[in-house]
Image (cartoon, rainbow, N blue to C red; front, side, top):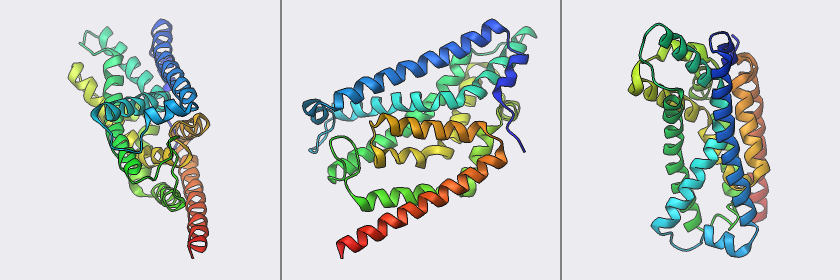
Length: 268
């Protein structure tokens, strides 16, 4: 089985619309990365880093600020991987519009997708709060416990080969199949489609996102590496993606176990 690439939307999407969709997705991604770069630069200043993440009790403002940071980070990391499905939606919507149907703009579909990642951001922010209160995160948002890092790696490695991971990945890899199976008319329908696609995407990648605590939540190279890996999983042929998931999963488990052994020896 191979991936039905969303770039096949070129056949049905007029050049002007294609340019508009790609420009909007690229522009959104670039703006998110500009924010991340600026925020990462600010973290290098001790006063700023301590202002962003305290090792005391958070207040509501802290939670909202970190939540927004996670949302923007997820936009920068995940919107590119949704581009194939987004372009297929835009192509199908344009065709339906020519036939007289009332369809929602592509931005509605993307909004539903981002909403799911915003929901994940609540989970991630809550996790960061808990780790911070347990003194398991440095001011640079890196796990300070080798045990925590090992557990995250083993969990991510095991999840890479679970049936739910592979099932969600197949849905993300098949934009044409997804749109044809889940097509719903109208604004509410487009938003629900975006939510559904976001559900599969979160189901595929959420544990990988937890690895941000291992390499640093604001480590740009680490963020980029995970984003590239996620994008690669979704655009490569299914059989290759499944093999890559198994290989990377095994590697994560091995590294995690090695860290656990090292930690156990050091603690003993």
